Length: 467
Image (cartoon, rainbow, N blue to C red; front, side):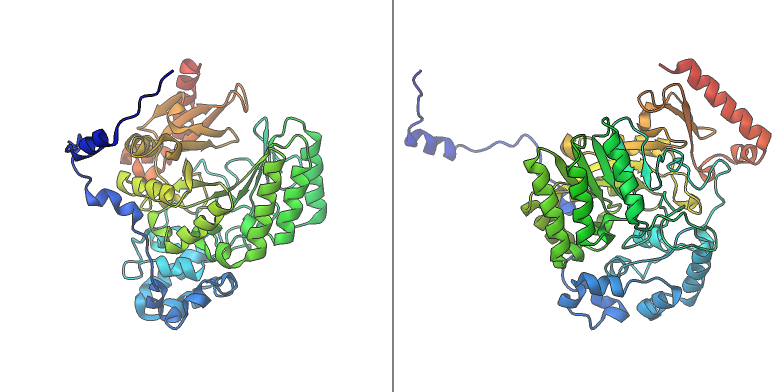
């Protein structure tokens, strides 16, 4: 076959021909996802005014200076907020099922001139004035993780996947944590299940995983893998890689979103993770990092540097967000989050419809909101960088596409899902927040008999349409 080459003179002619665009110029606003916060922004916070960049980047300094009590918050922000806001927060903390722990980095990203509406404050500092009564169908472990645990700290729900919880601490504590039954310190509202690091408990978990040939995918969460020492990271990784049945491993951490400094200054931890990833690759096994960004303001120039470091080492990072009212429940914010994640080489993986978690009814949105957002986000970027919007079905049904319900009554707020490959023959109900329903329906939910009628009707309709 003869290959014809275009003469250089012809190329010059082609280059001189005008290009007629098929689309109008891009609106600069659509490129906002590339604009990352940089500079010494933290110095606007009174307590951090004299903190150098070197100090602010030190993960040990970040951990040591994290806010865990209302007095520390007050001494940090000082006169940036009115006294009634501090009192509102103090009472909110007392009513919360989660302990408070917020890194200086995260604290510095909050707009303290507008603390009542700031999407980062909403996620981490509860306000008593904004709290709503829990949904009557809520329970503390709504996903029934403990019921599906053959040994403490190991949930085996899906056929080929298990969730390993080696510890119960995190670099920050999210108000909306679905594991508020175990994570963090006891509060006035909740006495926690003990999942502290324990050699015997870990060995029992490893023994169970090794004994089940169908288990190919292990999620290491908690708590948070960020809190594991480098030696523990290695111990867990080596133990799982040595099992022939384990083919995939995911370390889950909120850390990159709330303390990217660890990835920049904790060399032993990053080296330990890298070594596990590289060993897995040689064994033809996948080891990745899953993280948790919820709002585009959480992604800064520090985030980009940290993600660049992981990419240089060949570490894949995926993101799981939680859909929250006032945080990321508009097409504009969710699209910006998805695009900004892609910009820093983090793959958007899931957006969860908020679980039924105690004490955070003010954060929940409806299934309909998730379906609406997915419709608007899809097509804004590549499909592999577009998250799936899911409902983690209460009662242990696992993650279901939000739009895959068997029945959904938007009036009563009840959606019904099935999980044929997880728990065949069972039906799982999700309940939209009451404050988004009509006054008449809210009154029905106040009556136990009416509640049952609405549930029975939804189940009957779901069984009629289930396939």
